[in-house]
Length: 423
Image 1 (spheres, helix red, strand yellow):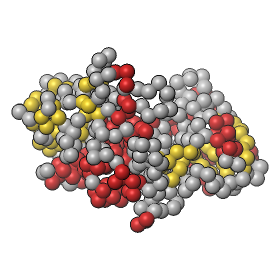
Image 2: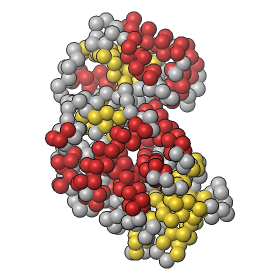
Image 3: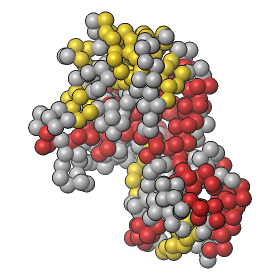
Image 4: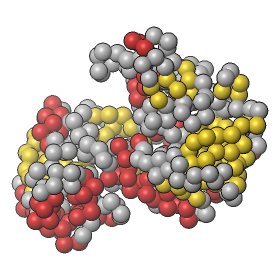
């Protein structure tokens, strides 16, 4: 079987790259082993919220010049970063995933970082939010006086008390209540089912969300804000709009502990968009056994397809770094398991991590060694027709910087453009 481009990984970077390739008419295959970081998404995307030295960032584009030359954004270039960032909302809109920036904008109408309320009651910077997810212009100047926080009885992945404590520290009075629904109660018989996705499937039924909305309305006693767990609209976000219209107060849907309903919905819609364009998506499969012609990849196989050889002009590796098992760790080394690519990491394993959990963790910045075109090295030599995108790219600590989604989207767009232009 032959393709123009084969992409390994089924997450954000893979889907963005695959969609761009298919929109340009390239015959494209995605090989996805399983779940990805979108399943853990908060419903927001970060571009850059903190520099490597710890300086907080309000306007990401203005901060790009302070990044080291090895950073993925530096390799892309300031002008291209701005171009790709501006194209992001349109790309996701074509997939049926609505995105919006914070209410305030920076110089040149480029959005500043907004803030989302986390399930731990803290406020984290974000660049864009999915439809229905609230992105605030400030973490300190809150406009509400009193909030009603409502959870489902027995749902442990949404900690109402943490959220209440966080808001009360900001001067917002809070009251916590629980709602019991018959169908949700049935999930409690099996603890593995009492998760956000299980509840979301039930709340997609009109009878259930209307009953829930009515019960929340009865609980209101003049509060100007209602906070609910983001477990509505697995298939269609319109449910959150309908619930909002039922309640005489502003409604904020706050992300739960994983799995993430907004992230899973986005992944489903992006996959559907890729396949509707004619792309081939191999789910639950693993790439292996690449064949090389000198410094070029000729083909690879997958576990499920056995001896069938998959050939392509270009290959993209976007399998998620350490988090997605795109990198493997042993007691004395880190390795890239599919192609055997060179990985940059400290020889002393003791400095891969910091014992302070909340400090910058060096292992989160480990990635495949790449040139400025995101082509990786193998045995010290560039692999000419292989590209790396997303968290597998070295040169930044996206967890510390708050740049994970931005790096995934923008490196994928850069790689796609290079492939399409033959660079």
